[in-house]
Image (cartoon, rainbow, N blue to C red; front, side, top):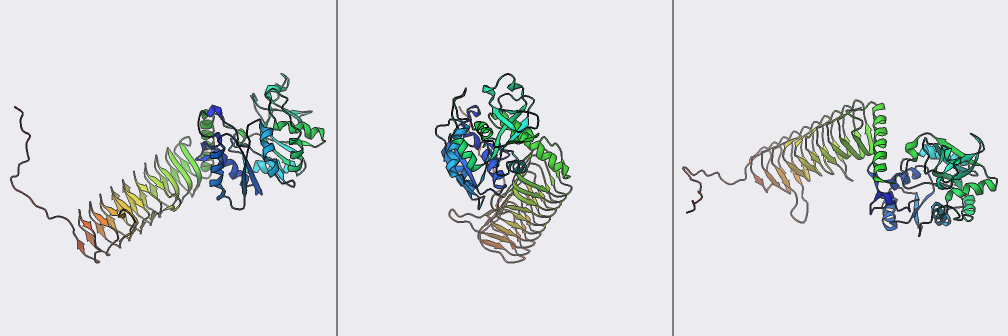
Length: 461
């Protein structure tokens, strides 16, 4: 269900598209659903339908074999009315799992247990005990472990019913053919004038169908988002849980409260991560990797023993970034898509590397740019030097062969090859390939004028 307006978010963006851990709330839910090996996913849209449906279209390619479609709920007349819109898209021989697009952290194992409780014939509800159940539908039973008799919405509950702590999470598993029959019997005779999905419980009881409850104690899995404050609270709770998981695996975090994992982070043995680091997409850190404070690393593989100094920004996007064993990166370095760095490579402060391969032992330690370049072993690339790879229409490649020294403040205008063992004098602009072992200098001749006086400002009268 992803049709709600989310008024308390106070945002033009549909609530289910707000991000948690780097992904839309709805993306989290769809990802979990896909992990159940479900045959299809039906997303019920309403408020901001065009934006939500566009997001579904973008995600479709990430889940081959998992059919996704959208149905619209217009106007929004309650949860029961929402699911009614999806009913025609549900196969009669299936089990329907009803999820909420603003409840992003539900676990696949929990849903599997709920489906098992349904067993293809029962109505199964996911429930949890809250110390303060205000606002939630209460689970009414004849006894502690007896089947569920009813769900009573908070606004419709009696004072006695409001004392019940077991509440409905909003998630259920139910045979599709039974659900369709019960949806057809819904009415809106209640305090809100809406069609409640929870009314299917009373229909199940009336029809002699067992209503089972799978009760969990993990509130994070059923936490919904209704405001920016709740979103921020859930973000921190989720990040702390991820930090604790990493530390249980042996990762050393300087402060688990100052870590953000917005994707998949896998770590080898004896990894150290300092404060305020952000990991996005898929990141692999090898054994003995050290990551300094305030780094952002996305879609990258960092090999054993590499050191990422503070304030480094690495983002491989679709091409990825690879940092070789024992490499030293940063501080204040930037590695862009396609950067492939060999063992022992040094990339220093304010150096940017894009779509370039640097072989073992190559160094670019200061204030430099390497774009669309192939750099050989043990190259020393001077401060202030750049590869001029773009002619205004096309990108061209620079090849710097092994053991080359590039002086400071040089411009290598691609396409060009600097021969093995060669040296380029500081301040040179190289437009033609150079032979191996040569010293190449391309700059204006220095002229010194003796006793020269700078112009002086004229004094005003």
